Image (cartoon, rainbow, N blue to C red; front, side, top):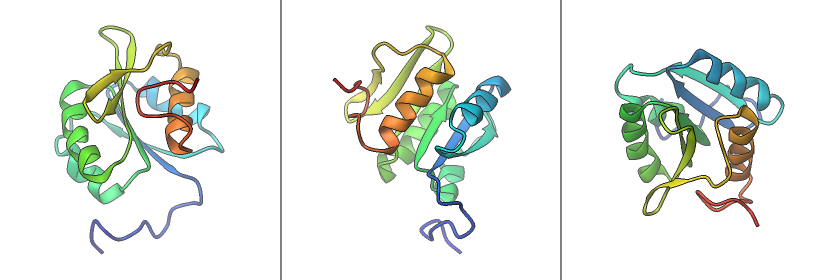
Length: 133
């Protein structure tokens, strides 16, 4: 098996990878995305986030630490996978766009806001970093 192989034991739901230092974020996203996506959570700060994501091949990635965000950005740019960064420092959510990190207007750290962005990115209704409107 190689990183380019499709996931063989995955459900029919899209896969969301959450690389987080906060267990409550992982749990909240798993709850709020229940029946919408298969959420797989991984502890932040384990190094080689890009390698993990290459082998996992998720449909969307959510991170909450700057070092993991930069490693995940490397993966995201190469694969085209949408990437969200939850920033506890300024209580904002960012989406990696073609020109860099873009603030998700009107979103805060509520699991429902993050869920809405993830769903929009998964199903193609939202351009990266911009709410539908």
